[in-house]
Each structure stands twice: as structure tokens, then as C-alpha cells.
Image 1: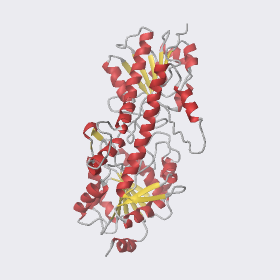
Image 2: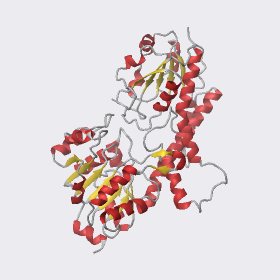
Image 3: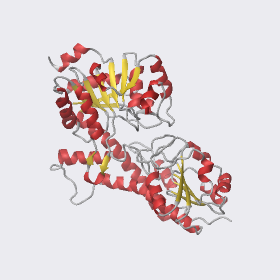
Image 4: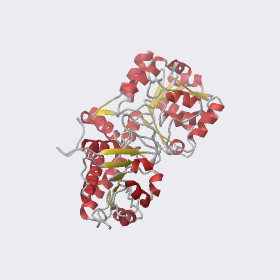
Length: 476
């Protein structure tokens, strides 16, 4: 029997499994379960010491994601009440499903050797393969090195199941395209790239994602093209951020305001004119942008190294962009050091308050947060550091305070690292009293405050790209 015949025998996708209950898996599972065409959805989560708590929370209809995520918790309660969703660590339940998606992180332990850590993903794929049945669809949503679906994933699934991809089961890559703070909206409204290992796999995966799309449309392609699409879109965004970050460093050196320049560049509109000008900042974090460049680079090394025509001896533009963005926390450390010198405060023994541990505004996502290397620099220099974040409850080996006053009290320097809404309404007079210093330092890594207001209150100000203000006269 052909794969098409096996799928026709199964009928429409009614029973779905989602492996990995994180920022991608939870909203995806919730939206699948909310579809009238779906009987039920099972979320699979290992009952580990670090993440096993999610199982009980999700089964109560509670979201383990603590940032602002409009509609998610309400949707979870709805599908739990309707008995259309449950979360479990029992992977044997995969056997009775029509389709399984995997949303598992794929980091790089060492970026220099371009070797990704696929251990968690391969464990998940192996578990799915162990319970795979004829006619089932398997979809990788994780961002992966180009070529992974048709090689590593296919080989593991076939070995574990004894079945053949494209003959006995469908296999595809349909990369997630979401950002914390708008997860449900992104899944519904963003176009969905769907790449199967063959036409039948692509069609079956397209059927699956049509269940949750509202405004978005399906964009079919090969599995490898889908892998390249995802790594490229994040690589390009990282490149755009690096471009404005480098411009911010230039503007600081030339004594001008990067936001004036940005506004001027962005003002040019017209036929055939596009200006994708992003915003500078204290650093790039998250799981995707910090590593997808390396997946793309590894992909071309594995699939096309002998065919690649590129300027001899020149470094990758994409890798350079990655290094610029990785440098920004170091630059924040330099701004902090220079500002403290202006008031005669040695870095050793100085108290520094970091505002924001999550990498993304109004989120609890701390993956690869740029605040961490900045804090490491301060600790190494002998500073005392406090950290505040209204969304992050805990982080390994880093005390996170939820009381802003306690964080700032007695600080020689206050450093804004995250664009949380709470930091847009800081009271300089209150902060001055809390710091208890004649000229406390404030470093703005996200353009959150009006420098003139703080300078008038006696603060020593420095900000990313604010060459027009960074050497201001100290008031009073």
C-alpha cells in the first residue's frame, strides 16, 4: 500500500501529539485542540526536575509561561474544560495518534566548531519512532541545520520503527515562526512554511497546519528548503540588528544621536525603496537568533562546501553580525565603567542594579539573555550586583528580585537591560532618593528614558547610540 493510500485510510488528522511543552509547543497544542476538526491533542513533556512541573500546571489549564501572553491561559482553560487536551510524560500514547510535531531546542554548545547539540531532539525523535505506526505524520518544528530532516531525523525514525519514510509514514519540516508575547497570533496569522520529504508528506503537513491558520497561508517547498528558510530569516534579522548596533557605536564615537539618524533613514519612502531599519540595544538574546546563523553556516558546510563560491579568505558576513550582537553586553559594561569613572566610583565594590533579566520586553524568556554576560563582567570586576525582573521568578545561581525599590536601593549604577513596560515609567526623583548618591549612574540599553530629565536630576547618563548625551555636563 502506498503512503497516499495509508493516509487516505486514516482519514483527516483528528488526533495530534505535540512533543515539547515550551514557547512553541504549548500555544501550538492549544490551537490544535481548539480546532473543531480535531478530537484531542496530547502534549508530551518529560517529567524532569527542571520542567516536569509543567505537566500538572497544563492539566489544570494554567500556563507555565509567565510573560504577557494574550489569550493563552484562557485558551488552555477552555480546551481542558472541553477535555480536548492533556499533558503527559507517557510517550506510549504516541501510538494512537495521526500526527506528531516536535518542538525541542537545538542549541550549540560550542559555536566555533559548528556542531549543534541535537541530543534532546534526537531523544524526542527516537521516542516518536519507537511508537510510530503506518500512515502517521511526523513534523519537526525545531530550527535545525539544513539537511537534518532527510538524513538524521529520517534515519532515527526508520531505525526505531522499522518503517520507511515516504512509504509507510509522512515526514516534514514546518518551522515555527513565533515570538514571545504574541504566540497565538503568530501561529494563526503568519504564513506557514511546510516542507515534506516528498509531495505526499508536504500535502499531509499542509493539512495539519491549515487547522490553525486564520490569515496565514501555506507555503509548500522541500524539507531542506524549509530548513534554510527558517535559518535564513533569523540570520537576516540578526544581520539587521547588527547593522543598527554598529551604527549606534559609530554615532556614539561621532557624538550624535543614533535615533535621529534612524528616523532620517527610515523617512525615505517610495516606489522600490525599502528601509528595514531596526533598533539598537544592549544585546540579542533568545534561543533562535543567537544560534540559527550557525545552523545556516553548518548547512552550507555540510551540503555545499565544495560548491560554494565566496571571496577567498573573507569571513562570513553572518558570523560577523553575530559577533557584533554578542559584543553589545561588553559595550554596556564599558559604558557603565566610563560613567562610574566620571563620578570617581571604582568598579570594584560598586553596587550595580540591573533592570531586566529576560531578553525580550514583557516576557519571562531568559534564554541566552544578554544580561548574564554583563553581570559576569561586573562580578569579575568585583562589583556587587542586584537584578530585578517583574516576570522572571528564578534563574540558576542568580537571585532575581521582584521589588524594584530593593533592587535600586544604594546603587551606584542603574542599568536598564530589558524593555519591560515597567521601566518606561521610572520616577527619577524616587530613584535618586533610593540610590542615596549625589550623582548615581544610569545606563539605558533600550532607549527607555529621557536622558535630559535624568541629567537635570543629577544622574550621570549613558545610552546605546547616544553620542549626543554620553559626555554631558554633570548637573549640580
